[in-house]
Image (cartoon, rainbow, N blue to C red; front, side):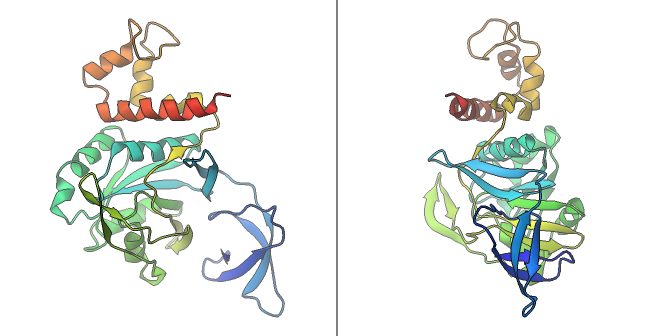
Length: 289
């Protein structure tokens, strides 16, 4: 594996001294360089992490994706068709690890970016206070703002395959030469699926910060240390829940449910409510013995 040196300019080819050292992209490690070849070395220790982005796959196995993030940038585009469900899953994962999140609407040069579902999703999350950046890897629109938003932080681009994460990295950092692909001929709800061009997680130095490119993920079940905190990732639902008649209200059939009232009045978007209900079943259900 390659380790980026402290000056962010030299990558050292390293192997692990012990298989017990679990290393993911973004980890800070100690290495010993070979005296005969300073471009090669050995990882001797992994420093304590500030956070680690995890997911639970279909088999129920928890996978670590990357570590020590300051910023999670959920990337969507007109194609493949974006959905609130996947966005919300990333936001839950970010909230669980105290990582700031933002939304990138890539391919904003396409007319479809100004129509549903892209435009309506951007409006939804802007209204929730999430930073939303419109960008285009093709025209360069929004890249200066994206670069400034990342600043000195470590950011990870996440989202479905085909939304242009690697293209954005190449536009921000031409020397990265991240592999890019095209939408495949397969169809998903009427829209092309992206090919998994990026198969590994990779870190790049970007101006004063760092940016991580990750493989496209169509399905994600966040791994929360305390599944009961799921509602905190949905602040509009959490705020409404304080008005429920019963403290342990499930927001299903109980009388005096303020959440159901807020949903009926339009204070809670139905897409967010659907995400919350599905995740409640997946995350809290998985935590039960």
